[in-house]
Image (cartoon, rainbow, N blue to C red; front, side, top):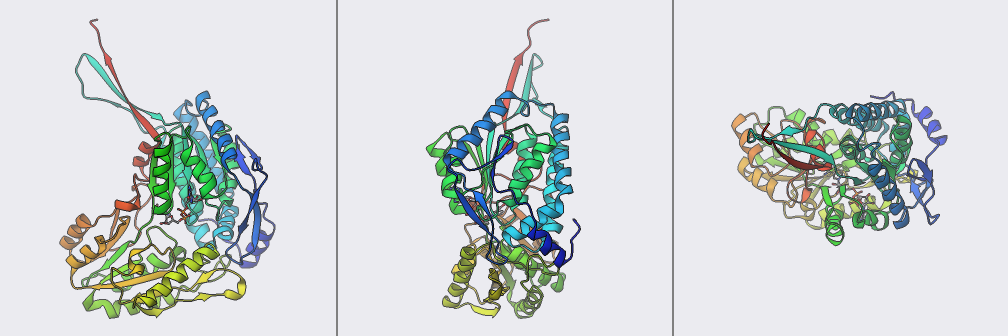
Amino acid sequence: MTKVMSFDALKSQAASLDIRRQAFINGVYVDAASGRTFDCVSPRDGKVLAKIAECDVEDVNRAVAAARAVFEKGSWSEAAPGKRKAILMKFADLMAQHASELALLESLDMGKPISMSSGDDIPLSISCMRWYAEAIDKVYDEISPRDPRAIGMITREPLGVIAAVVPWNFPLMMAMWKLGPALAMGNSVVLKPAEQSPLTALRIAELATEAGLPDGVLNVVPGFGPTAGKALGLHDDVDCVTFTGSGEVGKLFLQYAGQSNMKRVWLECGGKSPNIVLADCPDMDAAAAAAAGGIFYNQGEVCTAGSRLIVENSIKDEFIEKVIAQGKKMVPGDPLDPASQMGAIVDENQMNRVLGFIEKGHAEGAQLRTGGNRVRTETGGYFIEPTVFDGVGNDMTIAREEIFGPVLSVISVHDWQEAVKTANDTPYGLAAAVWTRDINKAHLAAKKLRAGLVWINCWDGGSITMPFGGYKQSGTGRDRSLHALDKYCEIKSTWIALGDA
Ligand code: NAD
């Protein structure tokens, strides 16, 4: 965890930050070819933090050309594993040296509380990079079981140019989940941060160069999705798009690949994750704290948010009171205040979208138990209080669509079989949890739940060692763990016939 300064010290550091505003292409900061910029607005107060280079097709072409040129040269793609490891370890060390600046940028840019960016996002981003750097010289290729008169080699080769297109909810961490394995395998990367949150991506690019990453291996093109993002998706010299974001845009990337060079597309998309609490839950207080944290952490802007709380009827009233009590402790506050546990919604659009879902909840007959309002309006920022709806039917809009805000839908069921059926009745399949002291129920439910991540008697358990990703429309492929390396390489089979000696 990085050291958190006082509220006053953070505000004064924020006022004097040297924000990187240009794209980073081939090892240097450059303006967009068009000269255009866009406003980077802080959700903390609605004020413009910086004018950022607005990259478009021309900038993407330049970044991809630089990435391809260095890939062909081999200074990274063919560097010895030990060399790549040392450079990426140094990159992680440099991020650690600048951890408090990165945490401040993240909180200013997307509104999460500073305690979270300095306690979770930045340390986890750094440890992700270290983990993949460490893996580079420990992952072996294979020799197949074979005829004694042949050698069958199965080797991994880097893919080439990877486009990493990432969202705004965990800007640096989502980028690191892509950069770690992609760079470790020897690829070149063009990173497109979300237009709402470009600042940490732009800052770390120069740290990578300072660590010794050859020019062109990591490029950052800030800009909008339908222009810069689309240009990457359609580019014939991009070998793979690795994307985290909404399902709607994930589907566009599949189309872009089909319209261009059939590039590989890896998608980490949304969720409507069920948190199942059964009557034999071993610790109701712990489950209530986890249920509240599972939906209100990061203002609910979490792909694995436990947005559907599925509770057995007999304990529902008691349990919901406990969740509400926990939620009331999470009062939205200034993201730069170290005491804040909840921050601002990323931008005005997203705030209005969340408020629209709350309206829909009322209109469809769900009962509002707490919250439901925009707060701290006087700051100019975009804050919504923790909101809980009871009496939600699994067919209501607030139970089906990803809200991506602090809104919990409580659905009651008769038994664990109905709970699992309801849990699976969704187009998504990212995460799910079950709280029970019955080991048989726990195992059976874990097996039946159609989700990439299943938690028993906890919410959001796991680490970089465990794959992360979803079933169904929550995506394809997995981030984290050694499994992620396979997304960024070709697997080559070489069969060598041995002649007579
Ligand atoms: P988004 O899909 O709107 O944007 C994600 C990225 O795609 C951004 O960089 C954006 O600029 C780009 N983009 C937008 N429109 C595009 C287009 N037409 N063509 C090409 N690129 C385009 O998502 P968001 O609002 O930034 O993030 C929230 C979403 O991310 C939620 O759905 C959330 O569940 C998901 N998410 C998923 C995971 C996961 O691992 N499964 C993790 C975090 C967030």
